[in-house]
Length: 294
Image (cartoon, rainbow, N blue to C red; front, top):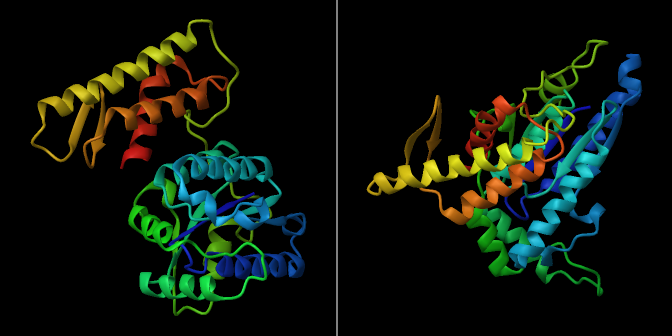
């Protein structure tokens, strides 16, 4: 069933908004006379339910491991009868794209709920949490330097991109999320579940011929090389359209070799077992790059 991706600044009230959604969906399901709705369950996933402390955001490696834990939990829980609320920072557009692909692979809808609390209010809340007595228990606050760093690196959802749409923004002054709009977008009133048509990049397929891994490695490396060569010839530009065969990759800003290689390794890892059709490797990787670089 649908995936709701919560996103927002640290200490913006994401868990509070998530709990409002849990309460609404649970009540809606209990009151519904629709047999399909009666079979639904709601699961709330966040740092607390996963046993993750705020300290994981102090280092890149521990933060990456924490994202992997959240991703695995969402992937494990997401199915046709479960509404999953992924309540986390989810501030990296590439990570939101991965979650979007998981939902699309299951042919189930997803949306992004942006908790639009102003930075100053988030800072005030975080300070209050740090100053509150914890009785030796883990605090829900972020260290000041981590808080500032996460604010700086936050990539705000953009409803114009397919992985961030539909996008619902909750202003700080709003008493509750737009419940009915979210329900209608993801569940609806029909007895038939809303379905999303998967594209070839998200359909799971059995491994193909023995030369598949060679082609996967070769094609992705050629694309990385083409991007670097284009950037070398356009050093005065801050970005632009990179033509790669019949495909065009829009670069919003120059990409570094480590950045490209990291995305390439992720793509190869994702498609090592669940193989793309050979003719879709290049376009699939370019699409994945667009989701992680735009």
